Length: 174
Image (tube, one colour):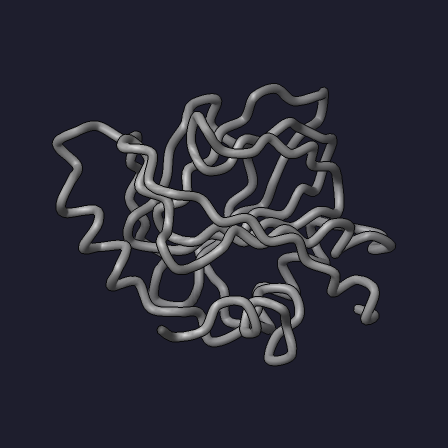
C-alpha cells in the first residue's frame, strides 16, 4: 500500500442515550484502501492474517443500529456499495464502495441504510476479540456495556497497514 492509500477520515460520536459510541476512540475510514487489488476478498484476508485480526466473515451489514461492546471491528467493502450510518440516529451516513475499509471502535453504532446489488463486506476483530456481542441500545444493556467498552484493549496492529498504520496514530492509550 502506498502513502496515498493511508489517508484516513476520523469521526467521533457522543453517547446518544441509546447507542453509547466510544468516548475516546474515533471511527476510522480508509477510502479506497484496497483499491487496485485484483481480488478484494483474498487481499483483505491476507492483510488480516498478516496483522493479527481474526474471526473473519463475509456478509452484509444489519439494517438496524447495532454495536459491539466487547470488541472493535473492521469492515472492508469487497462488493458493491452501501449507505452506512455510524454513531446512531444522530451520527453520520457515509457512502461506502468496494475497496473502502472502516475500523469501528467498540460501542460505535453502525447500520445499513441501503445497499446496491452485490454489496458485501468482510468483517474481522483484533486478536483475542473474535467473540463479540451484538447490542442494539436497549435500556437494560447499561451499565454493563459502558464497562465493557472501557475495558476493550487496543489492537496491536492496524488491520490494513500493520505496525505503521493510521490506527496506531489515532487510537492511543489514554
